[in-house]
Image 1 (cartoon, helix red, strand yellow):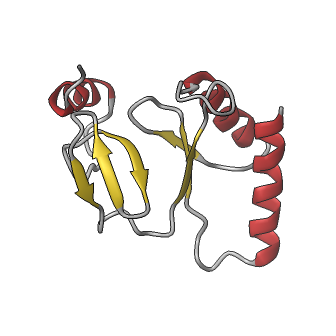
Image 2: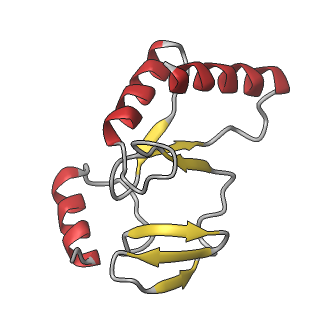
Amino acid sequence: MTTNAAVMATRHQEIARGVAHATSIAATRAFNSEVWDVEGRRYIDFAGGIAVLAFDLLRERGSDEPDAESARRAVQRAYENGLVILSCGTNFNTIRTLVPPNASDAIADEGLEILGRCLAA
């Protein structure tokens, strides 16, 4: 069984110093403001609300198997097409977008169109 401590130890080795992390838990699933960690504990998340839209890429529809490679490719394709997005998560299969609140509808639409193309490729 993976523990929060084990995930955080790996994170400490792999992530550059200065990158913030609000908690020392490694979430495996979430629903609304509830988060469950790798040890099965439930938390209420009041710290994650900064207009972030995130979603996981899985190997196939209905699967629970993370697809980190597809996430990596999508982030790279997006960058090559002028869109900066992030991948994150315990399994590195989560795509995270943080659209600035002052972005025009046209910019938001353009970014979503690029993202859609990159995910479909």
